[in-house]
Length: 102
Image (cartoon, rainbow, N blue to C red; front, side, top):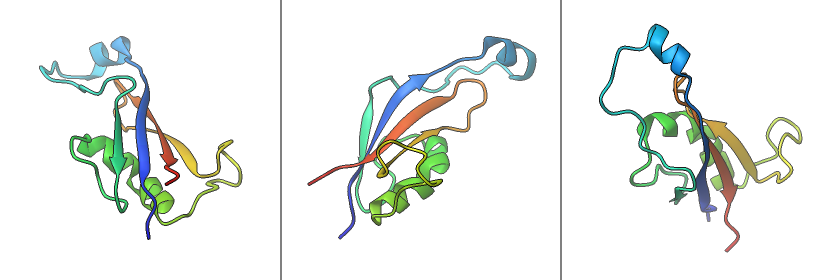
């Protein structure tokens, strides 16, 4: 049986100086909201989860779902969790991943 993993957006940052210097203007940027959360079942991407953000966290979610943890030898206070940021260098979002106790 695989663990369910809760994914919560905990911080969103923007770097206007980098956007002005390097990014082409875009009409629709990230629409993730702080506090928004999703539940991953069987290590799969939850409905509504940004595909790019999922690409940054997929391996960690899959590992937590399998019962693996303690990434990088004690990195997190809760060994069955991880803090992962999406790969958007202009407006990164930090996500807290944690195994749900059933």
